[in-house]
Image 1: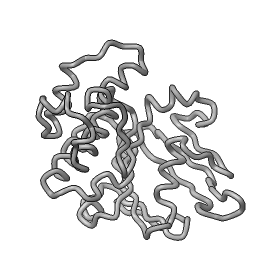
Image 2 (image 1 turned 30 degrees about the vertical axis):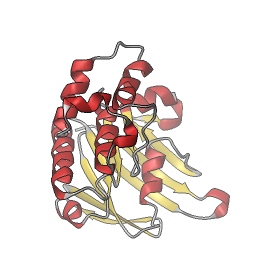
Image 3 (image 1 turned 120 degrees about the vertical axis):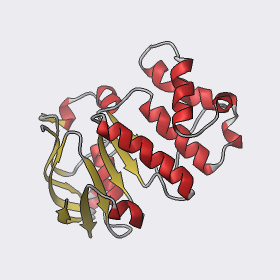
Length: 216
């Protein structure tokens, strides 16, 4: 199995304040990596570095054997998709959000695909025309997730996306993510959830900005 990410002595210390230091890590394509650690340890920062939302202050991130900096951000973000802990929806309706990935690619909106995606996360097809102001937190999170998956990425970065979801919705989200990973998507998930940590294929722990030993 080839490697999708290689991090070499990566650090993030804006203004001299060390948040991450000396991160050396290789992630295989198709892996499901779970990242845990105390609040403020640098987990989400690492995810944002992989997403190009932040830039390392030292070291290098390689993506598919190319320096991350050598790839245009639009092209990179079509392949490396980041899901925020707090879902960010825009426009007026669910459809406005599900149209967005098509607009980015200059493709016509495929309504059938959008409806099928809603069904995958136990949302009714009628949800398509629902105003986003009327969605619950769990509904917003599922809409944000399927927006990221309408065009299957190579990498899915998940920043505590199941926080606050009820058990049934959490299971639905887990099942969708696992199906995507089994079809070849690399999943890298930050979580505090004990059940997700216990079920991890590969667990990485960050404490005080440094990697601790992982286990598989």
